[in-house]
Length: 225
Image (cartoon, rainbow, N blue to C red; front, side):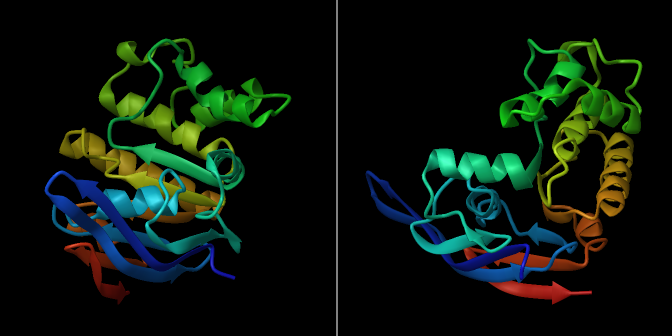
């Protein structure tokens, strides 16, 4: 069974000037444990595709299934439950809550899921990303690289079967970004997670098992290494 299945995905939006097609007939399957890069020029539909795959948005056409469960037909509460059980996220702009400490940010998805003990696994995960001494620091007290490490800890703390990363080094300098990628790949390999990564970096894409290339909202290449 595929970890992730996209079938004929389309996304259209209505503008004052008419209907705009963002994605058109995109389909592919991702095997458990596979590491897949989604690449394409700005405006090719990469981030929209990721939103549909993760159930953050619903397609105008087609379907998405995670571990065999079709999520694109669920309501927002249903999609949120699937995300809480199976999905982790890493975003370009970190998406940490500024009013919460590093520890509280990592505890949050566990608390939202209803776990009885959120603090112990959050502490352990922050230790794994090298921030065991920064638990009580707020995002504004952390560097960009440290904030993305908190985001990685938050993504992996729920033990997701599927992880989505949207330009995870986009707001970081080259050296810091490289360190974050090494950490992401190491944690992903250790956990055996399926990873779908949106990137504009061809060198990063080349490290993945497979590259899906978008152009004008269509899947134009599926390159397996």
